Length: 379
Ligand SMILES: *Cc1c(COP(=O)(O)O)cnc(C)c1O
Image 1 (cartoon, helix red, strand yellow):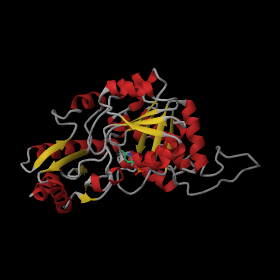
Image 2: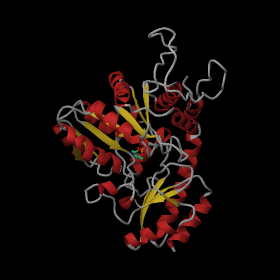
Image 3: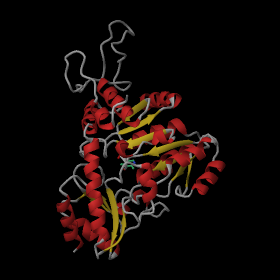
Image 4: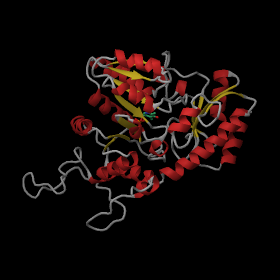
């Protein structure tokens, strides 16, 4: 019988030589060969493979229920390699109408120059997805981000995967906001799942990383080839830090979710708040689907304070526990104004978030302290 999620998160191989319980940080670029081409354990050069990275990849594959996982130096580097592996010149990437700014910039400013197009589709409308998939040229892909950042929209992975399968369109899911603990896209039919490991996987705001996991053997081979060919190799220290973070993913996520629920409810009841986006609120448009597709509703909340962009800026500089900074998914609470920060590259496009939106990455502090901090900042 397969072990449960938290047990698997902790299962890392002991070092066979010394018995070191935690896999060591193999801080080396190269490996001795016993004769020309006679490698020990298959290791020849750390761009190709490194044992600390291999241990992390096995740990992550197990959490996604995947046959293969590849670790990358950042989420965007993982995105770049995944797009290169799947999308062909002439093909197009079907993006959701709320997407991580860096993903948009990569397609708009980098891949567009290589003959890869993109189009924006409302992925909450399955008829619109079906029409876009039917018209998609060969070598296209659906890019799902669910839940989205920062508008907390959800896409129905299983329904979309079924629509796409008939047309041979790959379904790629950026599952960063959910983490593997809350959502399992491969089990729902996705071709590949991607995370910025910088966020919940590592969980401590101290390292960058990315991962792609898949059950498609041919795609996996292509990912491994490209990662080496373009040099998208994470360092061993970074891989080790992410591996350590992953061990506590489940307990951290439970607390992130509980605190976010409390924060969302408090904001909903607050007279100086106009709108709250949190999937756990029964009135949220994504609530029902999220309840079906996810284990819990996540640690991210966004809201619009009364008073527009100026009020958002005031809140952003007035909190003490919510630190004004980009990124999310760390143990400490962070706050940002996406329109001017994480999503600045989408400014002036249909993907731009509202300029008065405040995004919270709710940490694992004591909930009462977080509620009081926000209440004070809202004035
Ligand atoms: C942060 C983020 C990325 C990019 O990851 P990096 O590790 O910063 O390169 C991609 N997608 C989402 C949803 C993110 O939040």
